[in-house]
Image (tube, rainbow, N blue to C red; front, top):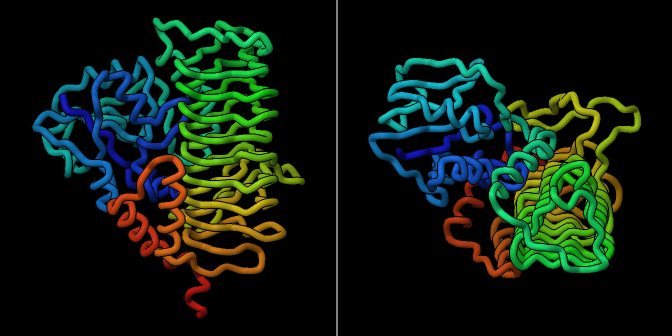
Length: 396
């Protein structure tokens, strides 16, 4: 059976800026991306049905026997069983949401006449950007069970590292931990392959550290936090998700936030995640072209791929930055920073595509990665489709 994860067009728009550069199912929540979770459940590779400009990087595989799964839906045992029971021409729905269907025609599946089955269980759906950090703790627990079932953790040999509930801690090969405190009494702690936790690190579960990532000396991490692969982090972090290949290497607070790939937060960058009047936080919503009430008291920074900020940057509660934005200067920047913006409170100019691509290439080289011609075409497409957000260009 060929399995494909597809972008729900409405959800995909609500998940911008993160879905500017990836399919919905490539969003990381918990330890794994949504696509990786489904691949673990089915035990086979899965391809993507996504936006045309992303399809070259995330190729689609089609056959005459296709199982399509909504890329925003996180798997569990019961949902996996229900999907496996689908017959050709049947669709599984939850409310008005298509969860999965079996079809011959991948491209026109939305309008395909099929028998509809209503799913009676609960479904976890990443249908808004804040759901990523909101559901991260429960997804760490789920992924921890998925990844460690039947396996034995590597031991922590460092005599100066203290652990609480070590049965809830899993250490992959090559990980190095020195003089740290790991408290898994509040949830599991997963340390990826070749990851490092330096002296004085304080970590409370649920927590996940991706492979090859580094936690600098004195880092303080509260629960429900994921640091993806190839990251460097320091300072204080609480209920945040960093997708991967990004740096928050210095002091400063990051809370109730989601950071994409290839981002860099300058030294002493701080994110507010609570308003002084304790009101619910409003967050920029791309399809609405305005701010949407999240209903949350705690909500921090949503930063798209390749964006960066200078030292001592202060982000206000509920800030969204697009792709390849570069933010610096004193004071609080606006709560919505468009893609390819350059500046801060003093105003913005456009981070021109050639310069942005050059910066992205240099950043990726530092992780032994390459900005390919495909990546450059994706950035150009994003630059073009976000031109209306850069309102200063209309005035020039």
